[in-house]
Length: 211
Image (cartoon, rainbow, N blue to C red; front, top):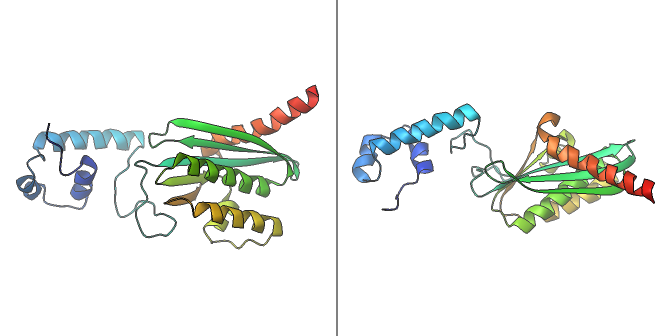
């Protein structure tokens, strides 16, 4: 089978930009009506299921704000921190998903007594370290902490001394990643990481009780 000189993803992007498909077909014999019809059918399914990943002018940008941020060959890393008492017993959770939204790794740790914000930062630090181990080309970090997301992106200033140390550590780790973005999401969309953060606290309490 002859390898396509234009990928399906690229072809859809060209169609989206109103490129003349008939002209493309003359230039590339692999672009057939059957192939285009199948692409549009697949596109309808992806849109219906909320899995659309098509390069357009409105898609998310990376940390530099220059190049389109996609999920092909990338990872989605959900992070969360929990503190019972604020400050109180605290745990962190990290849930890592592949480009198909399949959970591929989860981490849960107890970090001692800490505030919610400190726990959120330490969860992100763990998430970045795990992303580095995975050697992914693109990483989307997701957190339900608006403060964390906006401080990392430079939209909010870091005024707390302890958070400044953690902020500096995060920035140093992020430099080791090829391409990344951080996004604030609703708490309901961060259930996996939240469960793992609380699991870290529960495991400590259970072990402490047994001891």
